[in-house]
Image 1 (tube, one colour):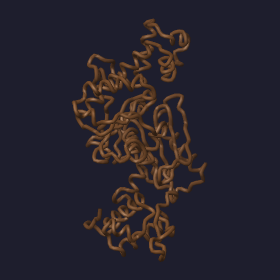
Image 2 (spheres, rainbow, N blue to C red; image 1 turned 90 degrees about the horizontal axis):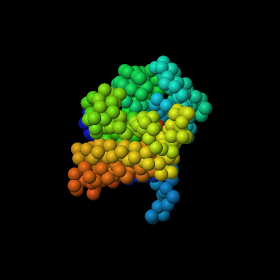
Image 3 (cartoon, rainbow, N blue to C red; image 1 turned 30 degrees about the vertical axis):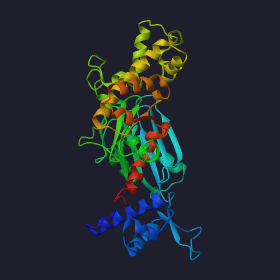
Image 4 (cartoon, rainbow, N blue to C red; image 1 turned 90 degrees about the vertical axis):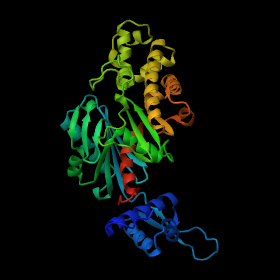
Length: 404
């Protein structure tokens, strides 16, 4: 794609990004081939490439061989070690900070588990301290950092860099971008955690090469990231993807949003554990009854799945019902958007107790014809998915038109 309108600096930035993308996707590649692919003139390519070399973003190397045995052309590659990206995943139970190269390769990973819910000031200080620790530990100068990406749950305004509402952290209207940029003098981008995860899936995971897919994440809450035409969909009010607050049972349990029967209140990890706790209080038969008799605080998703694998009927029933609720909500999204793939992220999808009934509901309630063409897969990014999404905010910016 060639950009020929607008200001000189605007065209220059757009064409540099185009060249950087070609080198990223096709490299090692010569200047001549870049000119052919971009339809830019050789002098324009030469000048823009030289600037990228001066910025250390592109490196030169001789080709290994040529067809005619003449002079070997100079080939160009991206210098993924030129700068670093800091990725932050901030949740109610964990703050994870990583240092990454420009290709998403994580070279340092620091995790702080939160025993109690921090106050707003404590939360901000923890993020600041953890970022500082990672930079100091790897002896990285701020000038070497391309940006700091932050992924956090709840409603996020990525344009203003504000966490509008993060219920699990009890935060409202937190100007985190402004706070961190003032602290570190480094560009900061903030995004909803599942939208960031969808971006990571698009670059590095199950969404590579797919223009339309939905990523559904289940943990303490439930959210989704929607990718349409290879772009993460956000909507005007930054609420796109709030699948957790679609109603699947009008007579269901009360959700923290105030409604009854939200998917999050029926099928999140918190909802599953609350349901099991209630059943045990009613003296329902379960192998967990004796194990947790004197210490309900030990109840966890890991313990619940362990009981299910041992054949415990109560835990299997609860997981299957959660899977059905998730399947109904997913089928609704399929009928609305008809994506090519559904990517499921979360600990509860590792076994088939939730996964199989989810698939059954999709087969039952999605429109005929759509289900045969849609793949339902598990995410392969693991626990690093959210924080890799935070990193990918700046990788995407680097290679997007005008990102430089």
